Image (cartoon, rainbow, N blue to C red; front, side, top):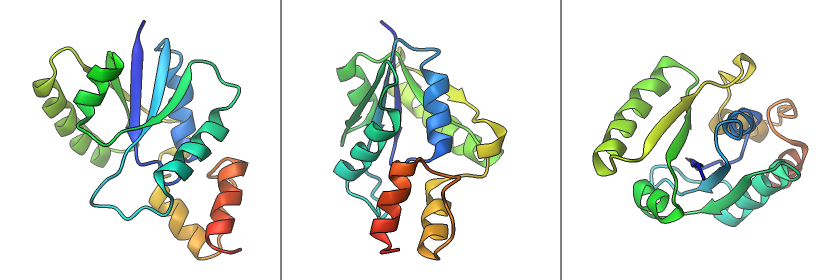
Length: 159
């Protein structure tokens, strides 16, 4: 069974993330959407809230599992029996960072592949940071996130 792990902070999950997930299930028997923490970021939502939003966004879709981890990604991937790490690339600036991380992961685990997927062009500018900023300033984010995430964002910003 080919298992791919799509790791990220997903704070919150966006339609761009969902686009990558939908492309991933075409390549893998199972896709694990794995929420992690990034010490360089201050998340708006707890890990549990992010898992809840992802689970809601992918409900009814086959072969998608949500999970969280707080360890080295390659160790988590090995523990889950994954064959690949899935990463989305929006622009060349993403590529430089992701390429470096892929090389480090390959050095740590020779059998773990990194698969880069480009989102639909309508999501190339989209990321969670932009969504949070627009929402915090009372902007309309309904075209950027699933409806359930939109409701959670409104709750968070009391709007």
